[in-house]
Image (tube, rainbow, N blue to C red; front, top):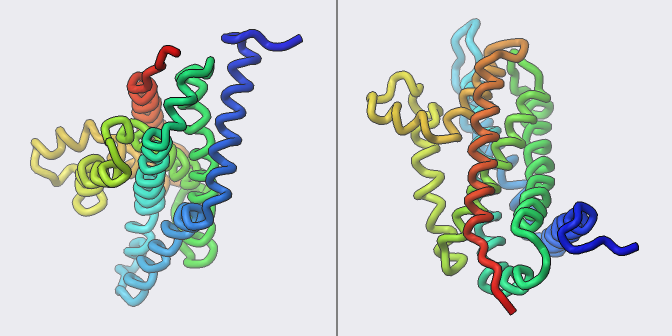
Length: 260
């Protein structure tokens, strides 16, 4: 018995087919796969050697440990935003998305499929970056490495969600790239990496409080300082997850189903 259109079985089949299609497209593009997996890790390696000979205060974490753990969340966010925005815009300009929207495929199935496929790639990316940072470069944190990995993956998923949303407002792949300094730049400067958020001017603190990357960095700093989970860490992760869900919902709202 075949599944009827709109049934849970049909929805699951559409979602699975979309996820598999995107993963196959990624696998067929070695350059994109290389950028996904290697760029954050190579940048962290560069950061390690930048700080390698920097003197550390006795009893205090190394500068690489303090900066690097934040970068484990920031770099996957940036890379996944860029790649997702470009890939989704390519689907729009090639007509693939338009053709898909003439089928019974729902907006939720479509966005969930894209989000899942890129999230799988994000998990691999964050896992490799954490592996190299902790086991090769000796990064240290008071909390569990698995918590760092969880936050890094969630940051990457946030990048995916914002990349999907940004692609809706671009007409070309170049315009999709231009959204990066607009969306990512302020979050990078105000997330607490360069200057602690509490030391920012009050009006910048207010802006920082509504930017999701601020909470991701806060969560990573909680892991770096505390051996166990904290209420603040879970609160920060919840806020990041809400931002990602809202971005996906807004991205779905930009999709328009054409009538035949």
